[in-house]
Length: 254
Image (cartoon, rainbow, N blue to C red; front, top):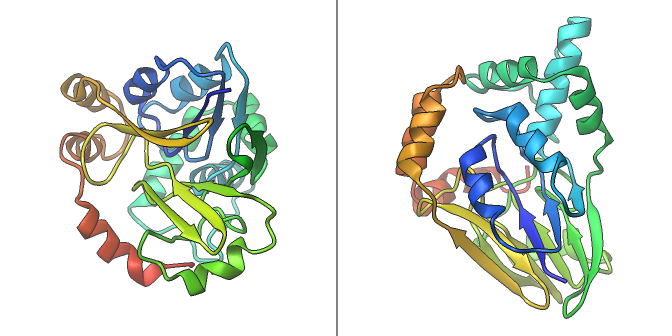
C-alpha cells in the first residue's frame, strides 16, 4: 500500500492538485490545510478524494477554530500555543479572513479531526502521524534540535516511525530507536520552491513535485487573501532553510 503524507498545504490549491496526480492508495493530511489563499476549495478537494483520507489537526486549524468561536462569543481564544500566547500580528488578519470563508459544516469537520493518526504500514510497522510533536500541534523542532531534548517526546510511543510537519522543511533522522521524518510543505515550503511531501510504503521517500509556480502565483494574487502578494512572492522565491533554522531555533519545543 502506498500512502501520501501531505502536510502544510496552506490553501495552495495548485500545489495540492499537482501532488494529487501521484498514484497512491491512501492519503494522510497532517494539518495546516489552513490558513491560505484558497481555503474552501482546498478543503473540498481533499474531502472529495476517491480514496481513503486521514486528517489530523495542525496549529492552523486550531487558530481558525478559535477565530470562528470568537466571532460567535466575542471572546478571543488562544491560538493553541502551549504557552497560552494570543495570536500575534500580522497573522491575526490572515486567520480572521480564513475563518470568515468557512461555513458551519466545515467548522464541524475541522473540529472532528484528531490530534494524531496511527497506521500499520508494510515495511515500516507502526507509523504515528502528528503535526508539530506527538504531544502538541504547535511545538517546533528541526533537524538541528538535540536528540536529548527530543527523546522524552518519542519514548513510549510504540511507533517505529513518527511523521511530522509544521516547520515546512523536510528531514529524516533518528531519535533513539525511532525514525522521525518531517514531510516538508506542499503549499509553502522553505528552501527550494515546489511541493514537498512523503511517499510511504514500503520505505519513506521525500517527494518534490514541480508545478507552474508563475501561474499559481498569479492565481493567488487574484484572491482576496491578506498578504496575497507576499504569499505569491515566497512561492516563487521561498525563504532559505538557513534563515528559517536561525528563526526557529529560539522557539524549539515551545
